[in-house]
Length: 372
Image (cartoon, rainbow, N blue to C red; front, side, top):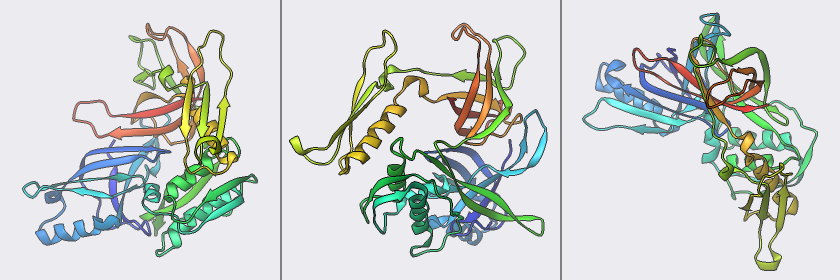
């Protein structure tokens, strides 16, 4: 895979100048958010020190983003599809050494910027979940700056108790607090799409996408397949999974604001399988002043601490298919010595990563999957 790496304005998403000749690029996309890193040899793009300074100035102070565009494939080897944006990553860190012409770039997916700015108003009371999400993102894009981001007008139709105070947390943490619980559970993404002017790509538009209870797109027409080692290769090259009880819980005890007998307390439990030992964990949410908020947090922690729900990884050739976070694929696995059962199911992609390979090596995506 050979992405074309465009430099774009952080605020508008407009492309800036020619594509960047990046080396040693690494990309990941997920709900965390994902990260990128890459090397830029300034001699490949600048003829003079003045040109080098101009380009670096565009990227300083977090003013630029990186937008990789690929000629998509799939499903099926070399089956052409329209060009697609792999994502948008914020260039938030530049590293350089005086004697070395190579500059190292890195940063999170664009929305990772939400971790860098504190809330500028309060939301206290009962609110529709998605209304608060849109308002939080609206504050980011409109307070002291103007950022191109389409938020829409959708409501979830579920109201929850909200306690977000001005200046108490960053916007990313505030949004996570909305997701902590079974009431109003949802996932969200900021999706960039190519913007064309007279048939030429000039930048990207950014759109908020929300889904409840989770973000999923039906692509069960795409089958991720593993065959018994030694057989004809299928769509996946390998699969690794760890089921760890050290990351599992059957009961999560929550402790909120207060001390001693006045401290807020809650717990969430699930049923045990026959013969399964109990595993209990403690969760402290020191700023939880309402029981409903603490209960949502313990429920969320319990769901994330089930051994069978843990994320696993597969590797897939880049020329077979271009994955998207949230897509649901068909899954078929033939038996092997370490996994001696045939398994068919549906799996959801919750993240992917890619690192530019060396000549002669297989070019693959690593997909993060969960069952169901």
